[in-house]
Length: 255
Image (cartoon, rainbow, N blue to C red):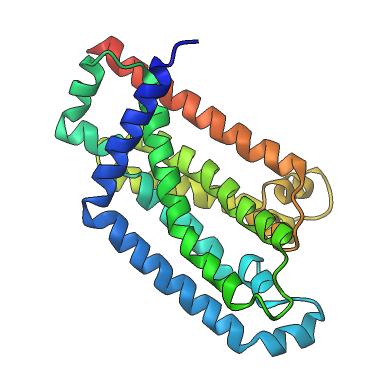
């Protein structure tokens, strides 16, 4: 098996990471993200006693990662489009995509390299929140296996949303359009999941529950991960990246 595609993917990933972190975008997103998440976690800590009395078992970390933290869902719907909006749209606006297309570089390494860069950035943005578990390590609310599932759920959602955002960026010619398209698609997915709470029992309600972001976060906050949700998000990720690759290859054929 040739290592060339892997080398190309890694080269593109490093290039994209460099371009992300030498501009203010990633730093502004990281700062805003940590300020918001820190404020949410602090407010949950302040109200942890009342939360515990109402539910009997909900600890601060479960409340933070679960659907009780509405801002967590909203953050995912905004951060992922912001990370992916420049992926291809900025290359097309500046004309540098022509240089990449002229290089002996396959469409798959190009797409995967850019995608892995935003996925790594997404993971790096979440990594400081591990301090929340360190703060609570002596309270009995931190279980390593459950904590791993919680972050696994966050990473799973991010993987799907970032793949969709990368596709939207490939379809757009400006970062703003890419951002709006990504927000529209991801918010649409979120709204479909809300049907779990408003529809009558039946097939549509079951489908909405399967798509529900809030239900996924609630389950993973308790250390549970339904294999059907895992398959769904991985399938969406693979499909979005495949379509993005086909879009990029169409540019090469047209040039």
